[in-house]
Amino acid sequence: METGAGIYLNDKVVPLAEARVSVLDHGFLYGDGVYETMRVYGGVVFMLEEHLARLEKSASLIELKLPKSPRQIKLAIFETLEACGHKDAYLRVTVSRGEGPIGLDPELCPRPTFFIIADRLKPQPRDIYEKGIHLAIVNTRRNLKEALDPQIKSLNFLNNIRAKIEAKKADAFEALMLNHRGHLSEGTTSNIFFVSEGALRTPGPQCGILRGITRDVVLTIARRLDMKVVEGEFTVEDLLGASEVFITSTIMEVVPVSRLTISMEGNRMEGTGIKLSVAGEITRALMAEYRKEVLSYVENTKAAGPSLWGFTE
Ligand code: PMP
Image (cartoon, rainbow, N blue to C red; front, side, top):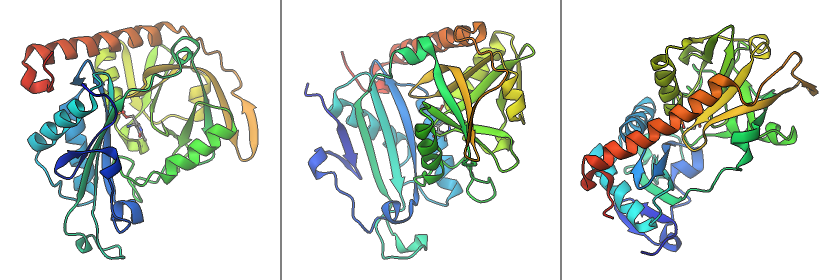
């Protein structure tokens, strides 16, 4: 089987060179659209149902009607994965408002644009799991929920991109944004957890975050392991008192944080009082359990029959 990027545009798999979208597409003109990123393990899309449900939710929050049913999207995903040929893949489903005349009115666009990109999963830098990453608390505040709800996984990513630019300037792997009230919210493409006073803590949905699917899996595992879990509102000081910090995302899974800096208001300082241990016991346990969870999901899905996961050996 040929391997490369698999692209599905509107109603069929197309070669990359033919995968073209109009300059009048409102996804391009205004960031008007939604998407999901999924990770494929051994041909199985991890948490497929949850990702499709979140896509539907993002779309409904911007009053965009998906042009395909969940079943049709699944079939399109499997076709795209076959075209790409990689069993360990990155997969992105995007739906934009579609092509239409200039103007913000969604009704200008009669047909949403739908596309899927599947490609080989680029390995993460190996040492992020062993040595941990540098996380910088940045100036850029997470979008106000009432202005542009971070629950909408939209094509409008400038908020996160601004934070990413700050992180890069600070030589950090990821940025951590605070919300408008100064509480911890989330990373540019990740959620944050920390351990303090015997509890696993993470900003709750009220802080203005995307409810990460990895975050939900980690919370389920932690509760199953009888850990004390607190979803709430936390300050930078709370984080500075942590013994362990980690971030989560579909592509990266669970990644320990070994260095925390604050680069705000032009000042750059190391997080005072931070004594993060890379090999934090709770982080290690959750990293291992997460991998186990993925393996059992993949096995169960395969056991349910090849029609579900789209590949025949
Ligand atoms: N927050 C933001 C802003 C993100 O883009 C992502 C990546 N989708 C996450 C959190 C993590 O979510 P998930 O675990 O579903 O990948």
